[in-house]
Length: 250
Image 1 (cartoon, rainbow, N blue to C red):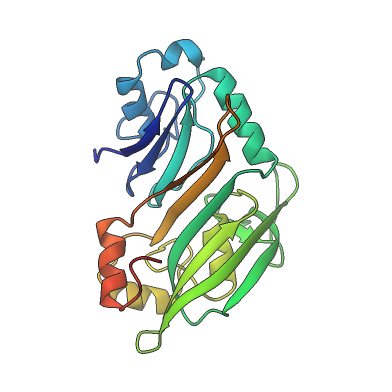
Image 2: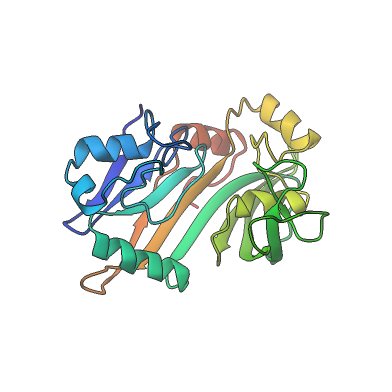
């Protein structure tokens, strides 16, 4: 297992850079091997006291928000139940700020906004889809999803855009679904990609979706101090930026 990088730690929380390829937690009870929860429980044995395990449920000690398995970047994790509640409230009330970077197929607009409803796919329960597509929803109503985007650079020869994404909501697969729905799927995204993104990914040797949680800002749950943390691009993301002559400092 690739070790997460610790950016900040105190008695209330820990901020890390999650590597791509690591799930946040198990999908079935008791199957934490190779997950971030396994790393956390080994490093912080007292987490079980703060977040007691319950029979038959997936254990998610201190997990405030999530990144997909193959998405890299900044994550904050609570070390106490009080910090967890406070941070969850901040995400729910949209006082946190999350900024992502992605490499996508096609030429995006210079800037814009995605807004609309996202639901489970009617044909594949592991996928999400936008409201304007046909869908069925069995676990409640479709949920509003909002994201602003800005194009950082465009490689005309390859037809690849480098974009900054600022989600206002936090729905499952939100950025991946919205970009794919706009016709600009993230390179390496096997689930939501199209023929163009698949071809480009193969040509550039991309092995996973190139989505990176670059920056996270929130208020400290005890002091109220505004904190911001930034994650450097992982090597695979950086190498594609270099191959496409995109700015590494963006």
